[in-house]
Length: 388
Image 1 (cartoon, rainbow, N blue to C red):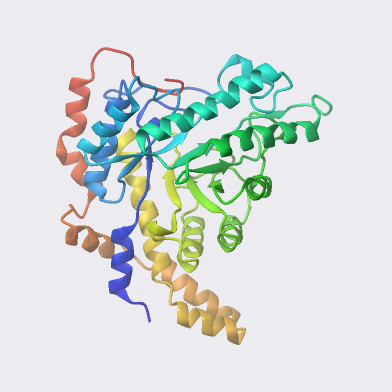
Image 2 (cartoon, one colour; image 1 turned 30 degrees about the vertical axis):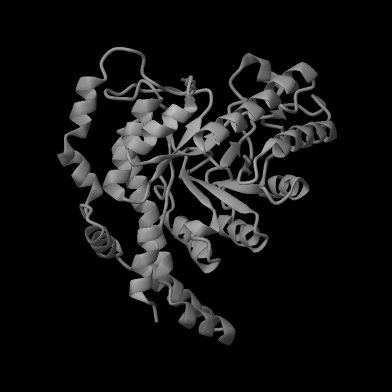
């Protein structure tokens, strides 16, 4: 039997980090559509993130992207975030936009460019020292487009050297979250293309290096929940970048394309005892809101993750284990599907009401007047977007 009180406690304790860049103008490789009221600077991004947290109660941190969120005083920015009731989360690096990185960043054949890229990673750790952030999120677009373009073994050696130098710079309470991506922009060979490559580098580095799973960075049909289960077993799963995709790295709202997959992933998180924030997984959104309004879309993603989590918590683990031990295939699947088919929206509305929140965060945002306020106030200046 499922302990409903325990389910409610787990949902109340859940934490989801939102990304600063998702509040800015973002888009596909085709077009970025500007929207009124979009933040013009990191402070306004943080203000929007604070609004999401006030309405959902489970999004207390906002990730930064450097140099998109560069400021003169990061300690002051952290204090500003705290004044709004949120904190600064993971620091994300950017070694993929400069022209120098056309042939790669830390794996570039040019030692001068490798030095520039590695120095940026070290600068990000300096920023962590100022903000109090514990997580350094690393994603590399490095790779090659043609056979013979560069030496595959040498590129792995260069990657390992940059990661080692960065790892050795970390403080005692800081860690690396190493992301991977199947392809794009490199099409023949990506230097960190899958969880196994990330895992191998993390093993070589040590206990302060863990894998980050971006749910959109896989080939169609990939069993992501298996990856989750394996990495949890090895204590090497450190973070998620939640989004949704139909084809490749679509970066759509979490749960939009395949809510059943999101449920299966969250079940493995629950089954592995990793939902509790004390376990240390950074659950973050990484999404591109191109045609939809920014803040409501982020709220929707938070709600979608909450719903998948609630369903995962409702799986009757005793009944499931009994059916599995008996080899009763149909009953085991039925127990799993019963939880997934449960309408958990009333439960979540009750959890929010118990926490003093509006049961309907999307409706609460519409009624708040915040959107009209930021549209009126954020006139002039340059809107933030990808690359700013």
